[in-house]
Image 1 (cartoon, rainbow, N blue to C red):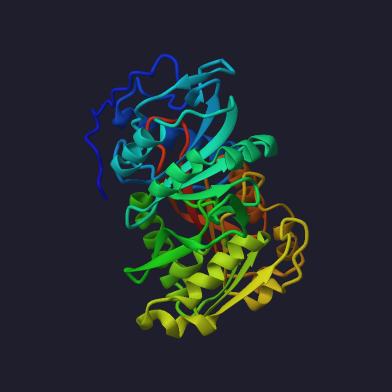
Image 2: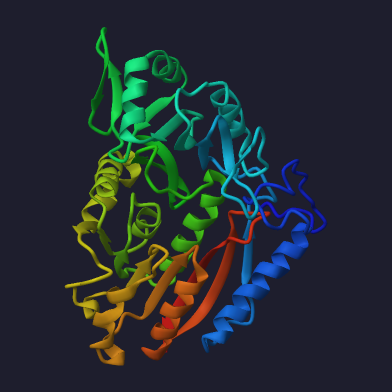
Length: 380
């Protein structure tokens, strides 16, 4: 753990205008106390029994993000202002890793032929650069016809365009859009061994490569407390939690609704390092909308691993209600960056006979009010 000095304050020239960070006026020690106290108070309000300590994991007080979304508005590139629908034109950002800041500096030199759009910049594990241009169809056509911007951009980075994540390809006369392409944009860990995660620039990943080490380690540690566990996972995505769990579990059933994410997971498993290939046969992938309906028999599993969207687990928990206490999986691992929905789900899990045995905050978003929570619940 790289824990910053408690008195650390991060300077930002946009402190009074940009809405991206809300806690720049507080030292890092004050931020730790604020976030820990807020989580404890929230879970207490839901009637949850908490462990004596909430662990606080930190990879640093700033400069962590290897992925960030910006908005383009009337020639300005940045984030929304405080209490405003106007974009603050940002040249530097204390949230960005040095590699992403360098990429952002180059990207800002582009002069766009339209006024509005959303942009994701990303830096991969080996420093490779990516950009996702989420523009209106008419603006995408303008880019394809204009040609010079895309040509220049492709000299610097891998480019994806639109909601369908199409890749522009120059055929000698014009740009054509081909189907999405999987590349290595993130890393997870299996028993301390790094694993390349295949996905798209536009895919959901955790924001920080450096902080993700703590996530993989925590998942692996908790699963390892239950040797030979059979796991069911809700919201596997591209496999960031799946693979650390798979390293020590007897089996994992990974459930996910997004087909593109599952394509990435399948490619990752196919390309596992030779010393990890033995784990392939332990993974089963299942696609479906598990917030609404789950057909699996939870009594066949020893543990549940969940990293749901902001809306929480919803109908995924219904099968647990139908089981007797002894039939329910002995442990439940829950990860979320939205504590409110997590608290609501944990309240329901508590009514099923689970209690929180370990709780950790991972501070991936220093200077902001946001944070990631990891919880281990055990069946009484």
